[in-house]
Image (cartoon, rainbow, N blue to C red; front, side, top):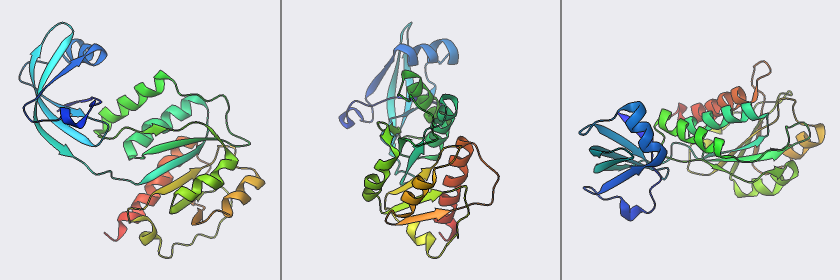
Length: 243
């Protein structure tokens, strides 16, 4: 079934039998690229957790009108946020795409000593997010916070019950009771350092955080997008292992 991202203005707009108008770039894509036809089924992803199953009722030059047939609310499949020491632009776009597919809820960009600089959110990031939502059928949008200095991690971590950091340095991995620490509904923060690693001062700051778990996985040096995938896969795998 063809899927598109549709940011529902209010939940009152979600009524079975209601008509939704798809306009502008999304309509153009459906009409000119997909060549959508009347009677075809289409899935709208609200960005707020709803999968909206529709049927195409009319197609004109600049407008596609669909009728809601069913609505399904999907709980988030992750309670994970990502604090990310900023990589270069292309690597960040990869991270953003993977984060949406994985189900990460929020990205908190950080400037560390060896991270890339001059980060700002652009319209291109919105397009990357929308493309990833459609590809993965993830009904949740992802939030990108304002850039923070690395030192803000100390205050930031207080908002999370669980904090996980994956270091390229040696760490004594302790998996005791790790399943129980991840598998509940508590918000978790995953910290990924820059490709050049954190400074010694930054590493030491991380280790003082409350509820911190520091891991060193048996891998080669990973690029930032790969590190995000491996680390989240590790945490999600542990959370599901005993389910």
